[in-house]
Length: 414
Image (tube, rainbow, N blue to C red):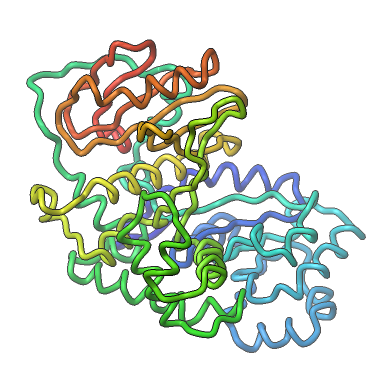
């Protein structure tokens, strides 16, 4: 649970965390800084011993003698910000191999440990990894029904409630994002928090996982990516515009991904299909960060000189991937695009089953809006189970294709 202005908000990943601690020796809860990891673990299991490696004295002790440090720990312990001490991971591996006890170590990290080569081997076969992202709109509104669950369960049906009109509150939700702290502030103060947050991550946390020569270069890359959120990644183009080597640009992208500032969404493809684009898309991890750093405000929603579409797409991707944490951890996400420039913003796979999600800012739906879903259905064949266009109108409308509907955007939180 997260505390916003004195109000506790549910974190729907909580049951999964309980289950993991009951049968797995090492449980990793990973996610961005300030997303609520510490609040969740301390309230979930308050009786556990708690060590935070932001404490310099504890950090130095663990780095100086990781073996002695682990040997001195209680039987069940939470180690917070563990990415700051990668030296401790082989020692945890050894302790678990000597005596496996469920819930022995609960590790939290603000860097994706699965993308840190030194850590992967130590966790293999011993750990369950859960992701905690900033608050979803479903959690903020305390909604019990997940649109993702309804989609993969085949439970979406037409629902025409009246005259077609636009729905309110979408721009505000996008621009504040999901980090708990900005949700307590007025818009200008929230934007100030977002700016300082990114600066702090780059100036402080980067050095825990990599050595870089120029923090300003990374800051410039991050800012450029916010203007390109929901776009295909072209590393050579980025490098040329920034005046950086391609290898440096790729390395900085990887660091930003490890620190949960960006997300790379891979391309969906089939081996027999030759006309598909295979480049990944980049999404800023939180729509509030994307809006602030690209100078987009909620008041710009009706200003058609401002392209709100990419940030809206990033917002939807953020919400649905977050919902997967309590719907099905095994879901896989990608995007579809082919050489004809026909695309689907989000492709969801469960086993061999495939669904598509398109995102539209419009409050109305045109016939051509569903061509991406039709193309995906053709490529996936019998594995295609349905799709939705999340749009800004108020009625749930059939699209003339089996199990495909135009769904109001606020279904993400209602």
